Length: 194
Image 1 (cartoon, rainbow, N blue to C red):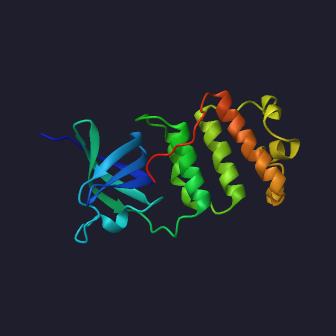
Image 2: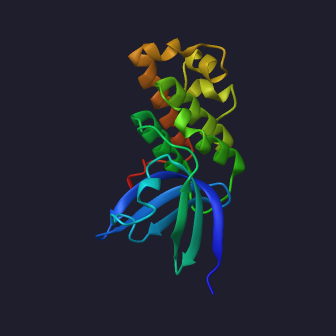
């Protein structure tokens, strides 16, 4: 007898598998990051077809199918507008800093807010919050190794979003994020499912 699990989730990545299936990566409220196979979802008659777009908040029904999760049902909780490059980079960042099934309600709250990311400033705040929630963000004194004084003020929310009007500040900020990841032995970007 199969055990079924219901949980809230957000689609972070997807890729085609075979002629009609999809391989999906979700961040879920109860299970953390999981990969699941959606059988026949690309067929025109599939009831799940329109629900599994990137960044869509869902209610999932899953079962364990051998070594992988299998998607049984999904219901979109709210409609989502077109994905942006900012959201895509945030999703890739979450995929980079998370491993397998490990529930984390603080990280879930952040991932569930991914559709509010619309600008580079939103993306930067999302990444800083993800580092903080995951325990990778250094304390304020140690941050000077990675960020300029203006960037540290932005992180403390004592500076407005004009920081990123300067392209050099954007690059320096991203280099600071990369420096923190390297310091935590996270060397490579996630290049898996899209």
